[in-house]
Image 1 (cartoon, rainbow, N blue to C red):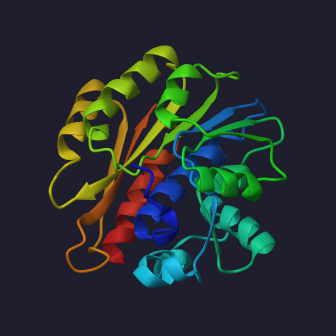
Image 2 (cartoon, one colour):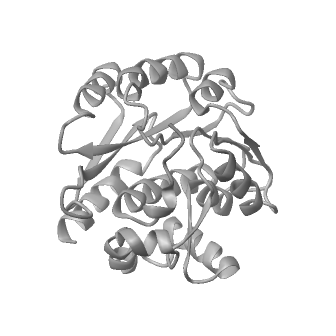
Length: 258
């Protein structure tokens, strides 16, 4: 259950979609001079290296960020956050979502990050020494339900499971509905893989039925290697902030032109 290691997949095309939309949402939220809460349920280690043995073994970063980085303008929040991380950690560094958030949030904002894997949680704490972040080694979905609504109530939650637990597809629509009932002003972003076997289909249908005004965005790309089941990436966003749908359309065009 705790075998998933994102180091093999960091900087892949799914990361590009997810992190570009996350950075866009946080950039919009931080324009207002009011504090916000950022919560993440499956935070990982926060910092990855694209020249690591794991990344080189799969080649997913070479097919991902290495091929599309120049499609993002220097002023894009995705580019700015990556630049802040590589300036500190070197050109081969790639931020996970916690470091994207840390690069864009302000001292007045709060971060609560859950990561159950002991080695990943330890690495995450080391990756965030300068930032005000509470790192919790606990089940992320339980954390999400117990800590909503956060204070301040204005904010965003990223739910980014590995889907190693196959029942996640069945229970996540209900969890997202409970979170929204408790925190109706919060932005809730759920990432999911698009798979050849369609395991995500019923979950996405249930979410769209429950939240007809949400942003539901999917991109497609070739499998990372022969026989690999992931052929795309999806992000479902409850209470999408202004401008996020425009960025989603731009990403759709980027992936279609890739």
